[in-house]
Image (cartoon, rainbow, N blue to C red; front, side, top):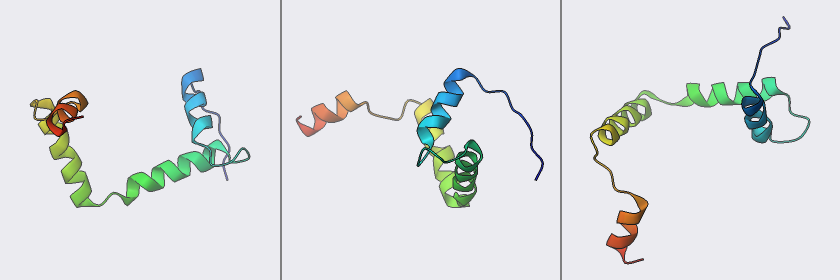
Amino acid sequence: MAVTTIQLSKEMKKTLEGMKLHSRETYEEVLERLLEDLHELNEQTKKEIAQAIQEIKRGKYRTHRQLKAELGF
C-alpha cells in the first residue's frame, strides 16, 4: 500500500470525523464507504437525480412551508 498525505480544511476534517461509524475508524475507511456508495448508484437512480436537479432549477418544487399549508399543518 502506498501512503500519502492530503490536505483537508478544518471543516472537511470535522465533517469526515462526524461520518465515522466508530472512533477507531480511519479516514480511509470513511472515504472507501463514501466511494462505494457512489458506485452503487445505478443508472436509473443517476437519471432520476439529474431529472430532479433540472426540475429544481426550473422552479418545479414546493417548500416545506407550502407543503405544510397544503396538508393543513
